[in-house]
Length: 436
Image (tube, rainbow, N blue to C red; front, side):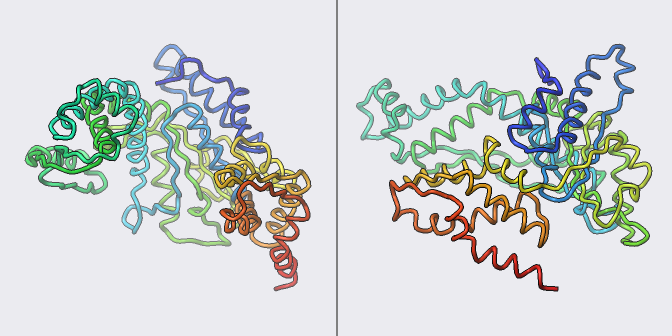
């Protein structure tokens, strides 16, 4: 499931630049790691190919500077199975917490959903035609439509004039909705038991009233499901996880202890449990065994009270590429507000456009918003770019609340407006500097 025309590192960075401001070192690192993955797949002989390890990455930087977004956008860009987990959700086996192998099981679920969606889209048109046929037969059984021809009903269905008509649809439902939860290490036995219960649970049908539009959606899903090969999807998903999977482990620093900080025994245990997975091991899932040897692992943390050197040496060795992400400046905030395709200013403009209000952000107004957000991060808790969300929400609270009363108006968000709406916020921020 590799890309037909793989992106070059420069192209990957260029695409990431559309969504994420700055952090060029981190972007280059993930771009090279991704290109190396494709290079490995082209290497001959296969015996050498299997020996080439992925370039796992450790990102170091404060919260809200783009660590997660870089990994997430990277996965979307190359259509790779991706999952984000927080290291603090896991504890050493024997302590309360999730088993680290569940990371791979969740990644497989993501891959199956992703590939199934792709396969469904390929047969959607054909499934829709079959759904129309089934729906026409149901409508013709109603006295109001029995005199209508198939072509008349099809035309009415396509134009949506029958969307709210009620029909009775025969829907299937399992007699027993039993789901067996899998204890760690017993996935295969659980899968066999689940398969047995599914066979014992004979499928029943019942009549259910719903609108034509809901019935059409139900039939399309049902017909699509008949056309796709579930076994092929599972096989493709397992291969995609092994060859293209990306796991982002956030807050890795929270399971690291130093002599100064100390920590619970389970913190060290998480590192020991993660190590085999990142080194390369086989994880049992209900769909089959998954080898983790070539999954790309990206770990990240702020490392405020601890250092990356405090990590277990074996784990450090399995995260050989280290990149430091910079704290965001006021200039960065300004660029975040104007440059990305999904910039916050554009989001609010689109939201207010729904209410027939034209928001116009001036350059000075945006500069002032950026300065206030940066100043608040400097004087209080630094939450990175997330600070812009709270500042923008307070800035536009009055407009959002009174929007229905201001249709067809143009509102300029300039320096004067920003100072007026955020004066209480700025005052509180200034006072906080003097509070111990």
